[in-house]
Image (cartoon, rainbow, N blue to C red):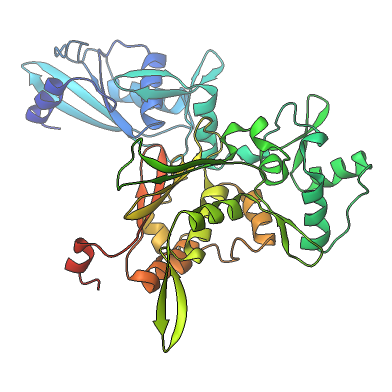
Length: 416
């Protein structure tokens, strides 16, 4: 960092990736800021600068060694910062820039007085992470599987036993306990991570309730799908339909395999069918009904949203929005770990909620290879109308956008 670059950063002031500190700051206070940076997107602390951006200069002996030591002993897991001196930032006054990246091993904690505290960066301040924020960091790191958490109050009676029996006997071709054998069912469901012990009671896990709950929204209000049809090409109050789709994720089948009660996937497909048009085309003299969007692609989108969304985010449903020119499916939460839209296009596999993936695969909703974006969604839309699905990763949500028909932009890029 040059003196000119330092001056520009001082001029802009503190923000989510920059903080000013005098170098007489305590080691635990500096560790707090660095931990908050590590748990967000990385950042830089300028040591030797007052809060008002005045350059005070460095006065501590062996400052680099002191910073390196606190990064080893006061931060867990330990980190190695990048340190750069700005000599003579003002005549006779030096500033040390201490930079840390977005940590690959989130969440990071400050260790002080025998206690671990997790901090996050919000604007220009560092604050302790809430329980929900901490859970999301652990989940993103793969160190916490949110779907295995117990759901307080959701005992054996919270399950739809018809769907459970259908799953173990018809789908898995196995045996199941008698309906009155509560202990037998609890043992079986615990073995497959659909129930767990909590406070000396057997209760449903989050995944168990999502898959087989009789009324999962009673305990997990974030378990449903909000489905909206608009009269135009933007969000607004002018809607054709607005429905809350609720219930168990899996369907109920008959002994012959016919669908007798829809699960969330089938309810979502039905919504799209009812709120999009079908046109008839002739192919070699045969009449073929053609939908605005291919059902195989919609099914893959809905299943992906259900099994991969971040269920630790309460108060936000999966969204299906139908506009006059496109259809969008939105999942709450960031993409996990190092997953990117480019990686998904290239066939990157990931599973935020492995139990959900496993059970939905048993029903035939999820392919064994786990590459639905590359193998189904993208080629499905190309074959349907030669458009490219848009994969949009935002801070708090992930959106897949399907176009009803090619736009001028698509035609300009060679799509016909």
